[in-house]
Length: 157
Image (cartoon, rainbow, N blue to C red; front, side):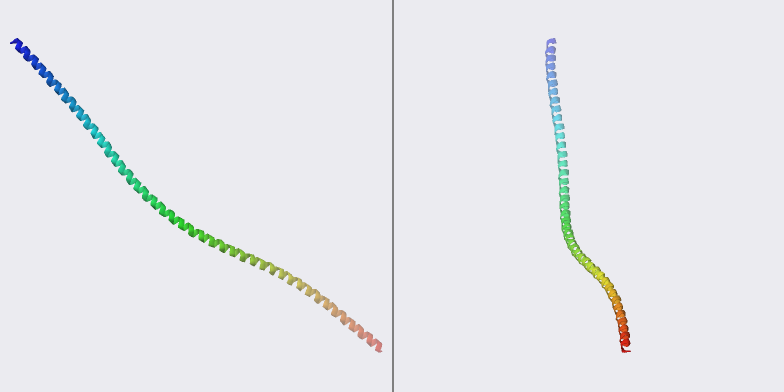
């Protein structure tokens, strides 16, 4: 009986060892599965974050494309305005050239007018001198006539 108990105890011990080993294996397998599940969760979380970031970047890229189109539109508008301004400037430069030419003509006319005025002043001075000489000549002629009359009257006597 003691030996039966011993054999039974050994069998029980072996069974307990087997149970214990199976439990350890099961626990080890469970930990492996839990770690794998955690890794999978982290992997899915990373993938989800990556997808979210990708969606954000795509939205940002679309916004940037719209902004670029707006900038291109504004650039075209400004180029058109620049062309209009360039034409206006060209027109103003032509008008300025025309006004410069007219100004030159007016200055030339004023110079001629000033020359004429100077000539008029000179002519008036000459006329004054001629009038004075004429008066002197008339006076001399009058005096000569009177002298002639006196001489003729003296001869006649």
